[in-house]
Amino acid sequence: MTPTYSIIGMTCSSCAGKVKAQLEQHENVTSVTVDLEQSEVAVNMRKHVPTKELQNLFGTGGKYSIIEKDLVIQPQEVTEFEEEEKSKLETFKPLLIIFLFITLVSGIASADSPHLDVMKWMRYFMAGFFITFSFFKFLDLGSFVDSYSMYDVLAKKVRNYGYVYPFIELALGIAYLTHFEPAFTYTATLVVMGFSSLGVIQSVLNKKKIKCACLGDVFNLPMTTVTIIEDLLMVAMAAFMLWSL
Image 1 (cartoon, one colour):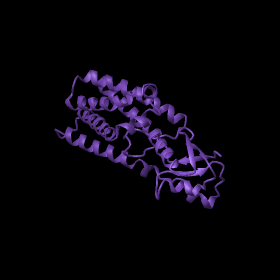
Image 2 (tube, helix red, strand yellow; image 1 turned 45 degrees about the vertical axis):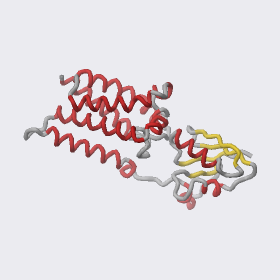
Image 3 (cartoon, helix red, strand yellow; image 1 turned 60 degrees about the horizontal axis):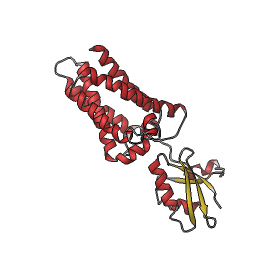
Image 4 (cartoon, one colour; image 1 turned 90 degrees about the horizontal axis):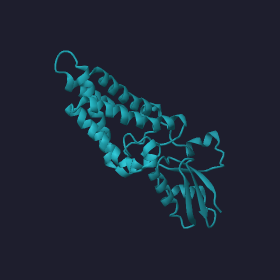
């Protein structure tokens, strides 16, 4: 018998591998087929295994929940099965804090006079953005590549591009910090961030429930319009600075 289950919390290739490995630990499970796009697994069993036993394989307080695909959940049972819903503020709290810190530090660094040097602030902001975001990707480069290749237009076809991308971000951050060849740096930002935003926009428009790789695998951020705004903000700032030269 091979029943199909929905998996809550499975957002990337790394998650899919973990779910498959954990389910196959059960003595009566012979194989597991994972459908990441549909967030489903088909579990081949020697004999029926209760869903509760399968859930126990993920451990107490695990990030994954398994639900029989055809199970009708009554309103009073929702709290037992559904993933804990977080408010948007709580979900994006790490991203907001990072943006606030970069904004504050950039403002302090560019305040050489009573008047804020807007161009200098934007350069420092872009430097802080690229260096900080590349740092989080380097913490677990493999997991970042798994997530990034789920939606980026180029990384889907050439997986190794995912390994290169954090280095591109780091190089751009250093270029902004050192004011290296501004015209080249701003143009490169337009190309890199503009191209990167294509995959993000496609995923959001197609309403795919996948993990955003902007902060690597450290934070579990969903792909939403917030991610589009983040990318397009970098594009807009680079375009403004290029126009202002």
